[in-house]
Length: 450
RNA sequence: GGCGGCGUGGCCGAGUGGCUUAGGCAAGGGCCUGCAAAGCCCUGUACAGCGGUUCGAUUCCGCUCGCCGCCUCCA
Image (cartoon, rainbow, N blue to C red; front, side, top):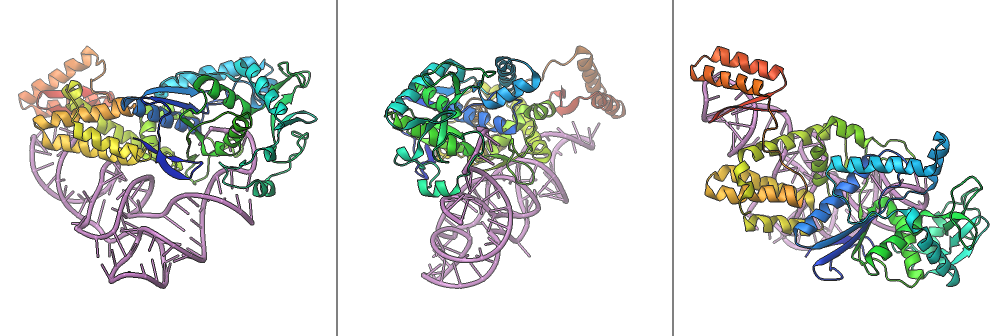
């Protein structure tokens, strides 16, 4: 049984599924108003690994992750580019899924869109107004934080101390009664896209969509709700507040992943403008190196990404590939059960991927050192762990090598056979100059791409 | 100001009250190899500082220092 840190309880607790054998989880997805950055890369890979691990462990996982396709940032972008907001959202969503594919992130089971759930949201907001948890302010409908006992659970702060820290906003949100209240429905200006509502045409506030979509697709009391640590408060706090105020049971477990920080240790954030483009990183490096980096850091801790860390990860990936080539025949074998159990034990301890990864490398070394029949099971375990449980494919087979190159390799073997090492070395130098990696094994020269 | 987290060897990053092994990258030495590459083996006076508890603390407690996050859009 996997034990996971619960943000609400501030403790590692067993992740008991609502229904045995099944697992329902909701991950707060992107607002499609720009290019994916490193933070997006981390969270999608982290929860992709988590999901794969659960599935690998035999659970039937329902994984829901939303796409916020109506939001102020999208409107701003649309205005700047003088195109319809929907077109902007569609453009960046396409880019989003394309990037996910490159990252090896599996599609969620469901990807609900905010715009498809507006009616549901209006219903929920109406319910909250009726129950006295929401009120109509000048420019929208607001949720009254003080109306819900226990508001502040995820912030770990009382309403009073939240009040003390809250900033008083100017302009937007002018209709709030209290600074800690949050907007549910924003009344639209004439030029903005809008949906009808009892309070006038407008659009939903950000915090409502996730409540409605998670409850609709996963049902009350679903197993896990996750997102970035920066979403714990206010976003998740506010989701929870709405669900409870509406009389619904919400998630059973809250988990939050840590932020990506730059090499100076500072969080990459939109307002600081220090986010790095994920696309550029993927153009430069093997996406598997990024996944390895994600695995290497604890999901709750800050993760540093930079040139140096990526290069080091790249070398590790090469090492894995080298292993895969050497043990290609073990791929189909039965994994050593004890090895898998050891891996599972580490993963089950609060999803400790760095620790589990260390264990996997121990296995790898062990398999090489043993080098007899026992090694097959160990090697098979390595494949099983990296490829199926962690979603990191190992490249064993040398990719399409041109015949002309193979002919040169054969010529080199001939030269070596004849102990004409001068000629053999010359051929190797040529091949290397052409960008090939040349390695000698018992069966002769092996050629592969770098 | 309120709340929370972190500080481990050159770097990243696990872990534990003593039974001296995490792991990765880098470095040095060795083996293998015609030479390389790949691989294997070995090596490195680590646990921010100061007190306390203890027979014994990197691990528990307290304090100090430093860094970071949330309280504002954010993954």
